[in-house]
Image 1 (tube, rainbow, N blue to C red):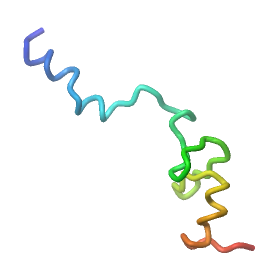
Image 2 (image 1 turned 180 degrees about the horizontal axis):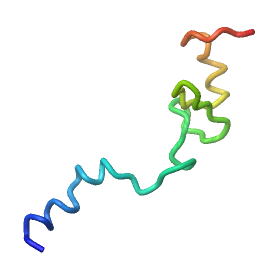
Image 3 (image 1 turned 60 degrees about the vertical axis):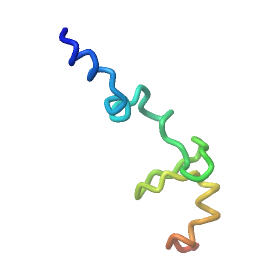
Length: 63
């Protein structure tokens, strides 16, 4: 390998683009960080407990 290839292979930019872990363990609530009871619909990514607190504020109605 050339010296230029060695330097670019492990660069910080590459590591930001690739993540080591994927799947359920990566999904967390954007407010409290919990992974349980997560609402992913409409790309909300918040747990049901946080949704009850902020749901009306972001435009959802309670029935």
